[in-house]
Image: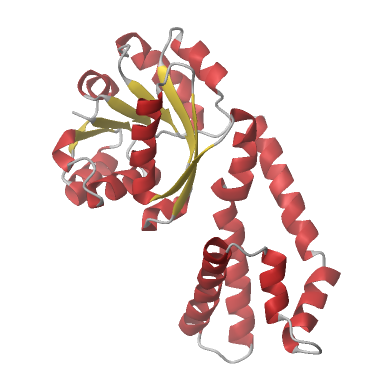
Amino acid sequence: MKLGFIGTGNMASAIMGGIIKKQIISADEMIGADLFAPGREKVKSQFKIHVTDSNKEVVEKAEVIVLSVKPQFYEDVIHEIRDDIRDNQIVITIAPGKTLAWLAEQFGKNVKIVRTMPNTPAMVGEGMTAACPNEYMTEEETAYVCTLLESFGRVEIVPERLMDTVVSVSGSSPAYVFMMIEAMADAAVSGGMPRPKAYQFAAQAVLGSAKMVLETGKHPGELKDMVCSPAGTTIEAVRVLEELGFRSAVFEAMKVCEEMSKGM
């Protein structure tokens, strides 16, 4: 089989769904392992992939292996499978804080590894993933992994020193955005708008704004200035956000997130 997953949770499901939808690898060429029976049965029903309760079976059968378990389980899982990993296999990791050096130490031998950091918008095909291959990956193998990652969003190769920053700017940041959407909707409800409609207006405004940044190439400050008419409603709202430390709050939240990632 071409692709195997150890762990079949939300991120694994997002990756499976994107790859199958883009017809990069067929469901029949995928296998997923999970000790939690309802988890593996869910992906079997949803995607029609092969499933098992054995991590070793995934390693035995797959060419590329995605370690999609929680970071705290990485050490145990790697120690379980490391003797079965073959020279020509590729391991994709998605755990914050688990460096290439740490991964190499756990495997105890030369293994082709790509350290990645995707985010939850991958579940709707709008993920942002950073990828960092180790020295044993060829250019062709790295390009292939990027093709897999692009099936559920955008991907960029980054130096490993930036991976903790990636955690804060894209890995964890959907939570900040969801909080902002919720706060915007609450204010709209306070103004008389029904809650379902408030969520729709707030979420679409965030989606459209992000798309403007990506597609126009303009600086976010320039786009902000385009909305702020002299003596208008928007500049007054911006004044209040600045007064209450909006930028500083985001900045500090991201820095503490980055420091947490370094310590994992």
